[in-house]
Length: 204
Image (cartoon, rainbow, N blue to C red; front, top):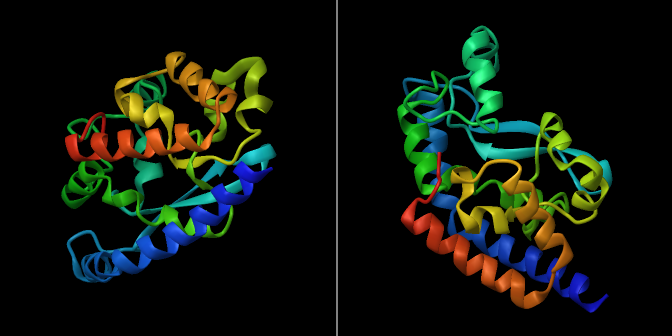
């Protein structure tokens, strides 16, 4: 399919250029990760479900304390709120997020390492946002359909409001993309995502 070939071609080219352009950010954040107050790994990686049920580790700049998962699990009330709130917590109530991490998320800079996932073929520049295993049940009988395309760093859900939109509406938006994939739709989503990043819509 011509669309699939050119989509992958542009994914690789644009991701390589993006990593070159943003390389100073890697160096600056590496310094903070080594010598800052919350020293630890530069990257945060988390298991996500990819195309055709192939799991992979998504990369982000670490915006949380090192033992983030244990801190959340140790607070059952907060964890239940996290699940009910579409696997999100606001920065004000999330004990895991560092001060630098709040800024990284608000500007979406924490997402930059996902260009590595794109080059590796685990993600695309545009596609449904990859989810953790627990979120799959939100797609019900459409799980296989949702996972029939490569997940993306930018998606229609993010372009439509990101964390301001929860399930089940989020599932409907992601599935709409799967049903209407096209080059022009991808371009539209990229521009809408860039606008959302500038405005910090739903970024937390």
